[in-house]
Image (cartoon, rainbow, N blue to C red; front, top):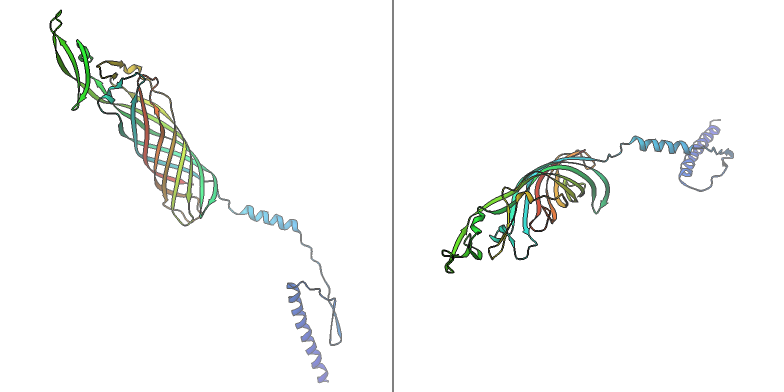
Length: 333
């Protein structure tokens, strides 16, 4: 009796083991599975059950999962800057052999410095991969308090040019000398050669300006680096607030002739200038490579090129170029 029971238990164990292996094998293989299996004369029927999956619900769940994840915001920027502005001024005229008095005495170029301070705000409008890093394109605007300073030389006394017969005007050993023929008491045709030193005054044409730039900034950074390099291009509108001439302007030639332009005739132009800049900044904080909120500290060099006429007209013109070097503290948020 006992010998008849043991084989049945053994066959049941074998059957369960085969079913387990078969179910695991069919989960990974694509072979067809038979409908029945015969073990020790017993027929086992295998039933297939088709489970229908609602694909629409899966797609909706995927969409909800994407929507629930935080999306990187378009970062805004806000910065303050301060530094030094450099104005390079030159003179020109359309009157033949005449020169600006400042040029005649050897000061063909004027380079003067003034402080500059400003505020800017902007936003990123495009991001794209470049090499091992990312490029960000920002648009920004703001304002800055700036200035224009140009050296000028003036005559202290025009009457010194009112001589009998002018011969030559020359600049020697830091002196402006006028050679002339001084007649004796009229109506005598005789006289003598004489020279007079012309009294000069050096001054600065100074204007305070309010500058409003509109710039595009392209920056490049790498994920594991805190450094950001950038270049900028745009335009700057310069609003002249106050300042101007103290003396009248003069053109002279080597014959001792002069032409005067009164300070009231000097009218400034509307200054809208192309502006170019480049610089670098370093992240001061930030929680990680993908963090969009951080502070940076850096430097920026900018220039307004080419030269532009400060005033209207063509008889007496001052052309200027401006350059600036500033430090920047900028927040990205």
